[in-house]
Length: 184
Image 1 (cartoon, rainbow, N blue to C red):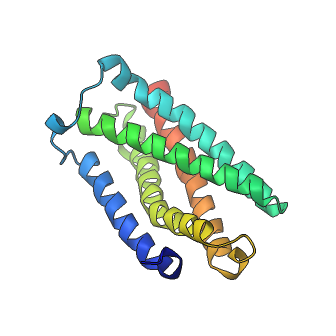
Image 2: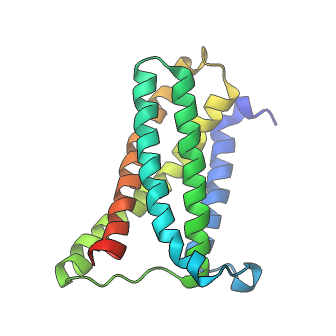
Image 3: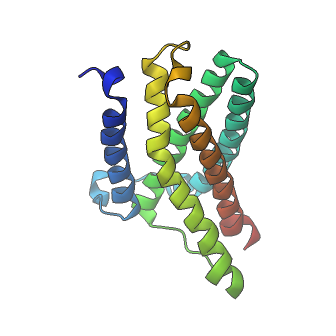
């Protein structure tokens, strides 16, 4: 199949596969026996490393966004590919930890625990899930079309939406980290 001619379909297939894997790990459907167990120190370091990865991804998105607004396609491409790599690193580490240990428990003041934390976490998760197909789509367009062709595709429009949602999702991920591991 020629990916260039079927970017929406390929994006859909890859998105379903990626989200199936994400939900399987997050819901602990993957048998733990299939996963090698890292030392406890590594498992406990993952949230802290992922907070740094997320903050770095926020910076990379901003750099990429600014670069394309200035017409610096090479810098934009590098920043967005770096963000994609950071997202993959974050996701692999996060899902591995959740598959082994389950989700982190939150215990803060009643208002935060009952209202604020679930709202922030929920928005973060929804945006992260929505970003998967958008990012795959714009990435496939960028990889299968020349720079000169991209303005004639949905890449600029979908890319703006994907970048904005990705930026908010990563930022809220850092807020979730701060609530779980720093503030409470």
